[in-house]
Image (cartoon, rainbow, N blue to C red):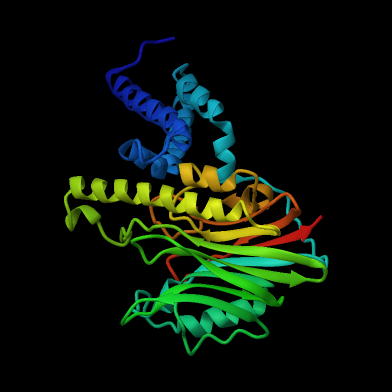
Length: 339
């Protein structure tokens, strides 16, 4: 086999950097962000790193070069992570009437600031939800909107703010017998819960909205602030997310009922907070999803930060992400069934 030419040597150098960085990123879900918040930033780039390493494998394969083994071995080491990025799941159209249809949607204040021109987000989201007819809806970045007209739901909302009142909401076709808020200090984010009754079963539904990075993906954040300030803000956000996750998990551990967790975690499925929240839970996308688990409208690579999870009392039958561009997030929906 011929030696590498100068260009291919440079490519292999870049390949080596990508492979080592991906290996490091594999470790991050097991590292507390408050201890190594700077390094934890890499978890946000995991989908990109996986895709880049796949491209390197293809490049060396086409050139019939043994250098393909580097990225191939690294990808195989982290094979379980691929399932959080892309799923090959056979379609399951289970329409059993015992299914509970759960939807999660960050509605971005129903487009109050007209980020998306020429839409009536409240009206169009209402039409979409009434068509899909979920039993339970969890909304983040929610605000009261006159155009929102949902039929046949009980509602619990937690709101705060001054000029722009916003918060979280849970809608349920099942009666709500109890509800509450898990306050997160020094932030407008929180988690809320509602205990709903379906037949003889009581289910606790959580809506969790963890701290946002507040990065506008439609513009270059480095044009507005230095990279140093950006990383400091991201580091702080990781630490806050860990503290918020700990408060939520302490509350969830005391739940006397079966549990469904919905929410916008503002972090990927390769993060410490995702690993902690998923412990003992089933991620509906991992169980029954198809394709890329893309829930956030990020133009560079697929990002999944919105989740539906259930505990072991449930089976997950279907999962779907809807390509509905009425927010910077996409609605996700799952059919689950009590065992």
